[in-house]
Amino acid sequence: MAPRDRLPETIDGLATDVIETAPAFALGSTVVKKPPPKTARPAAKRRSATRQEDCSEARQSRQRPLVAGISVAHEDVTAGTLACFCRSTRSGDDPGQVLALSNNHVFADTNRALIGDDLLQPGPADGGSVTDHIATLQRFQEIVIDGQTPNRIDAAVGLLLPEIESRTEICTIGPLSGAERGVEGMEVRKHGRTTGYTEGVVTDESYDALVGMDAFDPSAVALFVDQLRIEVTPPYSAIGLGGDSGSLIVNRAAPRAVGLFFAGPQSGVYGIANQMNDVMESLEIEPI
Image (cartoon, rainbow, N blue to C red; front, side, top):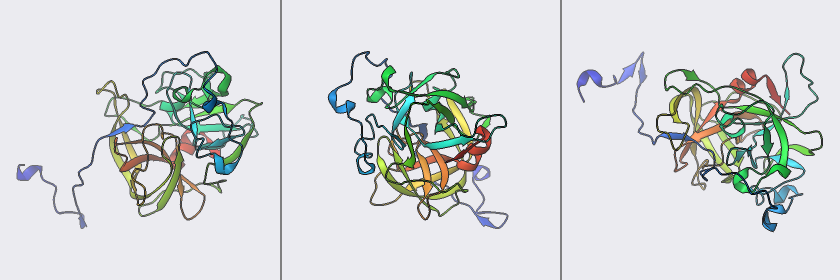
């Protein structure tokens, strides 16, 4: 490398370093999309988990009452994770209505969905069908996929159907007590559809990254800025894998939401999450 192309050892008195890292991709389920069969799912998928201690084992199954941290997706998507339950802070909206939060690429099929589309629990990759309709797509932040325009969030919310019973808690983590900004060095946790409960540490609170948004189209790349970079900590081998997209990142020290997980390398050794404060501001929501 030519000397002029090298980073200086310091910038404004701060030491610099180059950290080599694997490329990141949006982590929806890697199962190839196909319409779910219009027949009843196998018996193993029909069981409804009803106890908190059962929710993680059944995280890819139908669960009623509904909890967060389990399989969910748009009707045309494979599977992702339900982050948490929210209320709208937008003027004119009914604050008593319950919203479900996940990623744009989980709930809005990466910008392709229409407001009012069906959201299923479990997701289609886990046997979800029209009988598992739990919510309708309410709104989402469009992702600009040109590799140059900065994006801050990959997020969407759905309006729960009135007949869907839910518990405002995250599987194995429990109820939330608000939200806060994620900062470097913060120890965090999450529960997702694929890897269940895992823990990590925030290694960068203003991370910029190019993220592959389509496993079948290498040109579909989006630039995300001011993200959380989270490295997995022992004894866990991955912070998140395909299908964990949408998992809520929660402070280990207190049950406060700090980020919305959406991307990482196939190994899962690190993950990328939107700052929860940015998600709340853009979608005009707050967790409940």
